[in-house]
Each structure stands twice: as C-alpha cells, then as structure tokens.
Length: 374
Image (cartoon, helix red, strand yellow):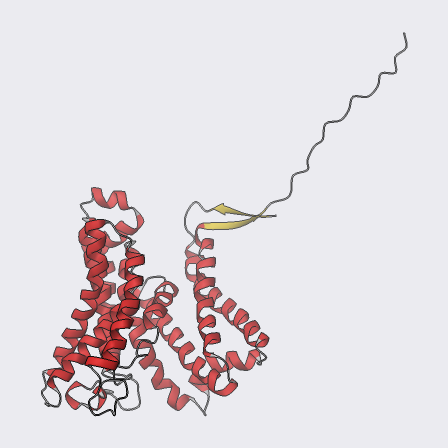
C-alpha cells in the first residue's frame, strides 16, 4: 500500500518538476476528454499546442496573438503572486480588471474627440486607480473588521459585472450606436488608442507594462526589505510580527498592488485588443491569472513562461473550437485541469510516496491439549 511520508525538507526537484508533470497530465486527461466528445484527441492537442506556433496555415496570425493574450495574464498574475507569497488571497482580480477598464474608458470618453497627447497617460492613471480602489474594499474590510478577503474580493467580481452591464447599456453606451449596447470604439480614437508598437508583432504598451511589472516584482521580492517581509509573512506569520512586520499595512499594500496591476491590464485591453466596453468585456483573465501565478511557482520569471503557455491554450482553444467544433466549455475545463493537477501534485514537494508492505496479522493460537497420563 502507498503512504504519504513527510520530507525533512521540501524537495527542490519536485518544486520545479511539478508544473511540467501537471502540463503533461493535462494533455493526457484533456485528450481523454476530447475523445469522449467524439474528437480526435491527438489532432485536438496538436491544434492547441503546436499549430498556433508552427503551422503554416495559422502561425502568421497566431504568433502575434500570443503576446496580446499573455500580456494581461502576466500583468495580473505578477500582482497576485506578491499577495499570495504573503498569504493574502486576492481572488477578485477579474472585478478589478473590469473596474480599471471602465475608469480608463470613461476618461477617454470625457475627452472624445479631442486629439490630446495627455489622454492616454490619464487613462493609465485612471485604470490603475480604478483597480486599486476596487481592491481596497476587501483590504479595508480585512484590516478593520477581519473579514475574509477571499470571499469579499470574489463577490465583488459579480458587483463589477453588474456595473459593466449598466455601463454598456446605459451611461457609456455609444449615442451613435443605433441603440446597441457598447461604448464608442476607443481603439479608433487616436489619442486613446493602444496601437501595436511593432507592426504584426502583438507588442503594445500593455505587454511592455507586463514585463516592467515582472522586473519590478523580481527586484521587490529578491532585492528589497519589503520583499523579505512579504515572504516572511507568508512562511512564518508569528516570526514576521517579531521582525516588525505590520500585518494591516501588508494587507493594504499587497491587495493595492494586485488591484493596481489588474486595473492596468483592463485599461490596456479596452484601449487595444478589446476596443470598446461591452457586456461581455471580461474574458476571465482575472481567474486564469490565478492559474498562471501558481503554474509559475509565484516567481516572476516563471509567471512569464506560464503566461505564454496559458495564452497558447487560449489561442489553440479558439482554433480547436473553429476546426473541430469543440464547445468552449471543453476548453475551459481543459484549462481548469491544469490547476487541478498542479495543486494535486504540489503535495510531492513536501511529502514522498512510500510503498509499505502489509504487516501480517498474528492470531493467538489455542493451547494444545495435554497428553500426560496420571
């Protein structure tokens, strides 16, 4: 029989091998899922992971999309990872992403149609402030009333979605849109547009911001005293108090950073790839970024690689839906499998599997009758 045995020290090998094994198991389980749905599993996996990068038919379009999809995932995941390392669980980045996009879009619409250079910088500030402000709600409730930041931040996502629907159908609706829901096309407004910096590359200011955030997070976590406090609070909360770490200040700081980065991701998305505010503007980036953060082991460099991988599943999933007529829910399940296997295999970092031989059960023997004669 198998038994989990605690390791004396966490295994560095399994810490880095777990994401790779999780990806392989996801391919196997995903292939079985696609086979159950009546599709060729090898063709589906090839469409998701190979064709977007190397197929002559799709690569020219899909390669630029890789950076477009990975940019917001990396930007949001980096902010989440800082809080996760401190044991502060922001699950509501999707709501902060929505509010950041709404604030940025509203800033652009206030200036429309004036072609002023200051519009785009003001949108950046508005998007960052909107995400930060939305994250401050669970932060303040946590520090003042000791509420659970997981539940509060998650429930605020649904509030943000209601505000998004009200904006698309009400106060931000395009007056020239013939009554259809949705704002003006911000991408076509030159002063507010987040254009590609290099043609047909997918590189825009949101991708640049994502890589700046990676550098910032790496320096913060590995070269700054605050990063030491963040990691100490996550690994040894009692020791952190003795070291002078203020828990309330850390909650405000970590949730504020993660909300700010999620808001920036929303801003760059609405000014670029998404183009306008619609009812279904949110595409799940805030939730997928949680997978990216854990797949990247909460390390900035790992998050870059994980973000590119998850972006590949987005692009390949769209190809699989188009070419094989797969339902979108199947692709979402496929992405969810990755987090499931990752969390399940994480146990191997602290525990090892030990094969135990069953011990025989000894039964007491009855005493033998005496053969002596009197």
